[in-house]
Image (tube, rainbow, N blue to C red; front, side):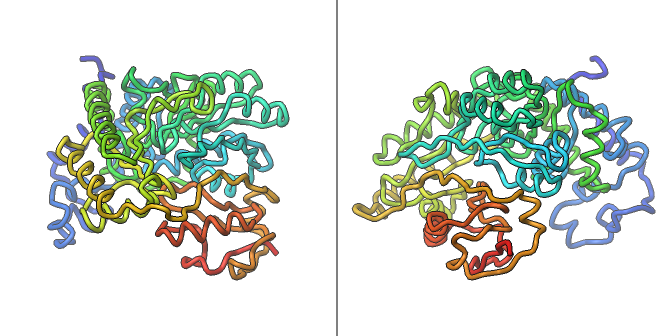
Length: 482
């Protein structure tokens, strides 16, 4: 077994060695291996609390890794085909922000699709970069945003040759993939970096039956949500980089915002999950593909529902499709996706990932079982039978092209006032408004409020979407620039 064999889990091994040493803890955390908080220990278990420890010599330090964390990151880089991998304990939000802030400084331009996660626009607020949006195409029937067309990216590059980077979702929440390999070549040909938001694409690295991964396509940086489809603990992610990016500079950027007290529960879960995916990922993903295809076939035989897949591929804005995504169109039964989401949770004790205006997403991954799929299919059939509505007026979801008036940073930090949301038309928004999940902004700082946008927000609220991002959590008032 070589030193860097994928069989190893250096952080796990170091934690096991630490436990055997029977150290007397005169450091933080103050619960001292759980002895100081009996209620927490009873809830989480002694095994968990015994490894909730602080950085020490034998465990390395995430801010300056030189031993076991460094080794674990090297193993992750090898497993994902990257030049280097950084362990992230602030979720993929922190990885996306590190990518953008590495590529861009104040005033720099970055080309990105408007249907990015809020974390990418948050990064623009932090560093003062300027977004150049490539408006995604829209599927008029399903009401979902698609990928970026290569032609759209080429046009944005031609009009903004001074842009520093292009950011691509790979895939979107719904499983839609752009032609990331062609977009990466375009970016590189014009001296730009290619950044991949792969929050929903961890599994792409471990199966030849799925769309190409960011690193294989030539991405310079990629944000990976190991906790979504890789099996690690919530909030644990990876940031991958290629050899065109300075490892040391990226590390400095990460350390601007990442905690100096990294959780070893999260770090160990990344280490263990990387090993699991590297050794057994292809078999795990084969099982997921089979489960999702079975679910898709069963749902499509119920009637009215439409669980979509590779038949959507058009070679451009839907260049490829992630067949592990179980997205279901629900407007055909007269219910918004969020209404089906609520019924599944409230009446059937089934928690799906999210529902939007027209679609439901059930996240199927490493931990699902066939009997769980059966239960979901049965519940959807019963919902159609008991709650189906015809002739009901429903808003047809369409992509609303934003009118960007000011830089996100300028709008967010500038002078602002709170106005009743109904009186905000024609004003420039200085905060976010979004349905969460998926966390794609309906309004972002610097964008003009229009009547069309307000109608969409009112409809989403009425259907039960959880609206987030605004200072007024009830969204009766909206912050706008003075």
